[in-house]
Image (cartoon, rainbow, N blue to C red; front, side, top):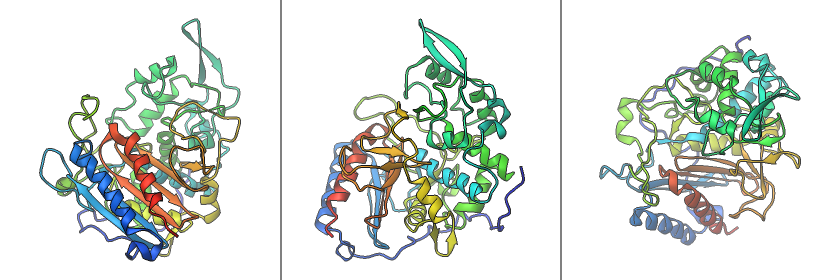
Length: 414
């Protein structure tokens, strides 16, 4: 495939002082938020920190073009006394997926591929994949009724899955046994391993949260002729001045790395997250980036602006609207419970479809995603707002994400 024609940009200087927010600041009332309600938010997070449930957190809320709330609470690392800071670096895990999904759609906008293209056009090993059907306790392989497409990857309807933890079928078990989480292999090697495994369903019939976005990252490499990291820097991270977002942290950033409790405070199970200082061979498009609240706020403001920031058009307005729309419809069965009631999935984002049904308040048209290590964000075009919550507490995320969402929405006054 031909490499896309793009303007050359200098690599980001990751040792320079942390950047400032892309927006001016304002008191909450100036943008229709309640200071008193935001103090309740701060108090709720501090209670969890005092209880030993949460090491610490960084939170940012921006509305109507201004940052109205930006707090760092608790400790950066439970093993030290260092306080959490606004420039603390986090494993953002699946908050990588929206960035990589934007990258793929940039190549669509460049005319290098179509969403309807079969996956095998780019990675031939996927041409003869089979679907695993369980019968009598055994896995039977049947042919695909149609090929997996790029769009299937983007919306997680490819039949690819994650391992045990997201399901306990024989296909999930096969994934768990294939050593797919190794950071020592490349995206090309990961794709080859996944292509040798059966799919969990016929293409386009089920939403299975999965390694699909890692395969999207591999397609980006094939089409652009660049490593995924180089493409992301050139096309997204450098233009947005996201200088501290990468697939690993530098030694000079060691003192700013967020860490989890070594043992989960609720389950008492060991907490194991990857070493951010290790430079991996695996540039995981599904969950490999580290970042800061300041950096990710630039990505969020670009999305809220309809695809551009500070004169840099990253993605077309209509393309972004297309990505942040329902791509599942009524016929796709949602198998993996990462999509709340009242929501659906677009191309790289969860999408709010109803005001009700969901377990937390929100606005129709919101789009968002989260990371399993304890991070979440959402974009609310109707409220002209984005919100970011960053922590490293995997076991508490199912509680902290809706708590944050509840209290941010409670602070909206006008």
